[in-house]
Image 1 (cartoon, each protein chain N blue to C red):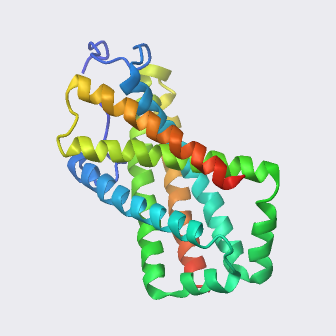
Image 2 (cartoon, chains in turn purple, brown; image 1 turned 90 degrees about the vertical axis):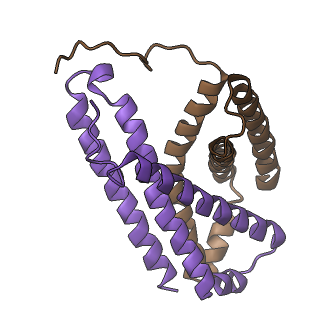
Length: 122
Length: 124
């Protein structure tokens, strides 16, 4: 039996929905940034700074980074609990998976703090 | 609970049809993108630090190694985006049959290859 104690929302249905809502946010953000960069191939620092200083853009970027955090947490949980298992790797799999999950969660939270530091430091 | 219970889906040994290849690539690209986030945040940080930082990122992206890393990152992003859109379409009940699943997998692969080539054109 796979324990769900380290899953994101403690419920499969909740994780399923969060994964899709965050996916839509990230798709919108990705398309916006790509189209913006394609339309501004001679982008200057002043233009780039003005875009990222706009409160609406900060909110969009914050939504994107929070979506990355939730999306990566759920996605990597799925991957780790599928492959780093006792059935595939033997009894050392459980401590290894816990270490990898804690590392993944630490990096995820660091990304969020880093992004907020960048966005509200400009 | 006995540990000798039968397993109905041993992912360590089963063969991979096209739908499974599309699925495993979705996972691989997702794991890669988790690392790419660090590169993107680093680029955002430096590019917003000042005009010198902005120019240093622009100069850095002229090097062949940086171009390859950027293209690989965009490739992972493009693939993950296309495969994710396929998931959302299937969640709406479209293409859920065996044949529909196979066709969707082929379309996702073709769409991703086109976007990855376009990303390469953009980077170089």
